[in-house]
Image 1 (cartoon, rainbow, N blue to C red):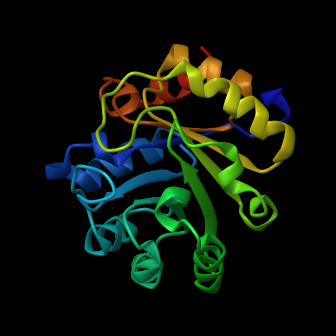
Image 2 (image 1 turned 180 degrees about the horizontal axis):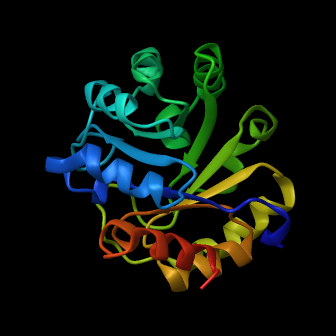
Length: 217
């Protein structure tokens, strides 16, 4: 199923060494990934704090890769302009954080001239995307509960990927617990964009790690 669709690997910078962030970015860029995934957490929508626009701006200076910015934050509409201006190529918001006004948030992302994605937590039903699928470029289905890296992939999300793929022809991204084994399951279900942290940054050979995720090895 996935063979007709380009498989894209998006290393998650949450797993990178932030003391040497530019080097880490260049390492995975040379290793052949398609984009960089950057998790933005506010300590409210999820119980963790990460980076803001200033870090995005710094990353933008050292790479030409698309920056896939995942906003795990409350009231994301307040910050779309800031993240787009910092260099994000793609902004993904959570449907759960935009209840009742997701359409307006999607319009807000579009107005910034960047790609638009919507994410769902593992327990959130696909019906939260009803009426919006034709307006977005990517759906990100979380395969762990968002907030922390290093969690175990939740196989109960696989049927949701399969169901979404029947109705959505664009990018389906998965994030959480992605490694060589779970990547195969996610791709088989219909995902084509794999976010991986420790499965790339935790390995001695980033290029081999990326090829393993694609299933070449």
